[in-house]
Length: 114
Image 1 (cartoon, rainbow, N blue to C red):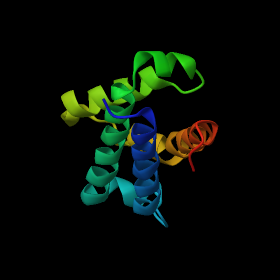
Image 2 (cartoon, rainbow, N blue to C red):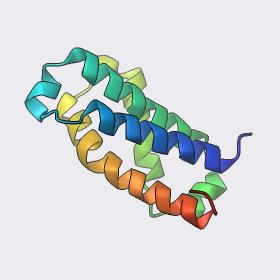
Image 3 (cartoon, one colour):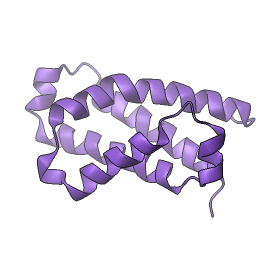
Image 4 (cartoon, helix red, strand yellow):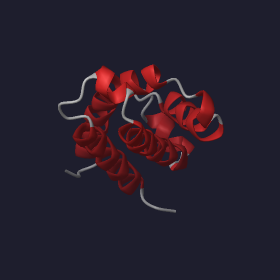
């Protein structure tokens, strides 16, 4: 099994990619841009996949992060792709992912990583 810090670094990288994809993009533009939607959704799935692969004990030690919600979002995105609500994706990408990135960065600092 991969060390937890590698999963956390993957989450940081995916969050950074989402931020790059959405630089200077408003919600209206996002809603009309299928390519950007797909790219953002893919990175959200990566975040969910990494969260799912973290050991349960590790997630229990860090209840401040909504691990189950992150994994549930990934499951909906993967298994119910055609019913994805792009407004929820937008809010997740622009509001929740930056906060998650902040939390994961703090977690990595606590683990002794940058």
